[in-house]
Length: 92
Image (cartoon, rainbow, N blue to C red; front, side):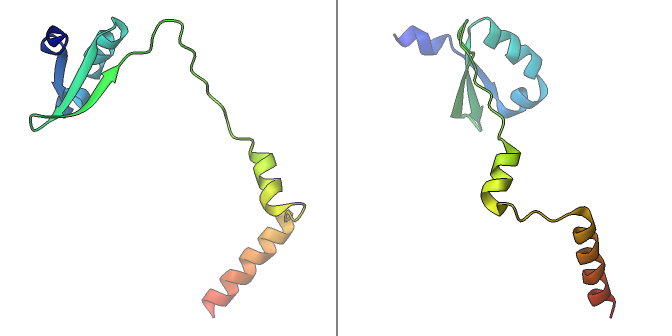
């Protein structure tokens, strides 16, 4: 078990920022990478397992808008009139 940590790749934050393509290749090969800041470990990077599915869901903006505002949605003309009224108030 102790040899696992001896052979783990260690990188600094600078390496992470400047040499990410090399780190990405290591991750694709199945390596685990320990990220260190000033000699202290702060993170452990691991690649995704083969066949692991990532779920990417996009928020349904129209449903969210309707949940917040209901049917009270302003038209473009109403928004323009409100903006003009705000500008008149600021100018004097």
